[in-house]
Image 1 (cartoon, one colour):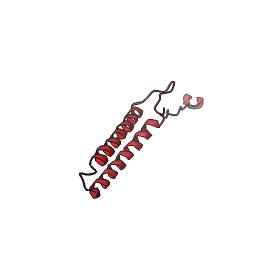
Image 2 (tube, one colour):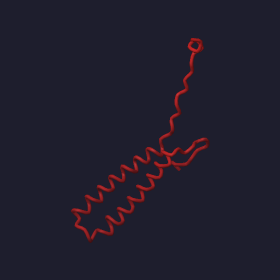
Image 3 (cartoon, one colour):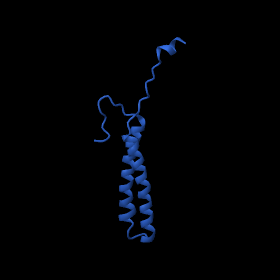
Image 4 (cartoon, one colour):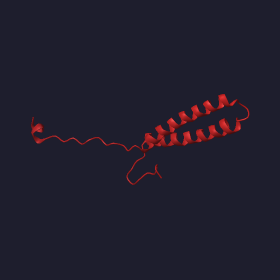
Length: 90
């Protein structure tokens, strides 16, 4: 599983929010396809229905992509800086 926590890896809040965003976008996409496309097919003119459904799916897809990037990006630890003994004496 891509969101699994490995040994020694702490799930930061941004990674958790990214995983939550992916799940929410997937649920919204399924609901939009079901209610916006399938259920409304005979109720709304197709010239209005198709662009609206496609637009919502594009926006939800961008949200899923952002959540995926947030959830799978590893935390970067700051670089360790060392001082030379010559600089410590000054």
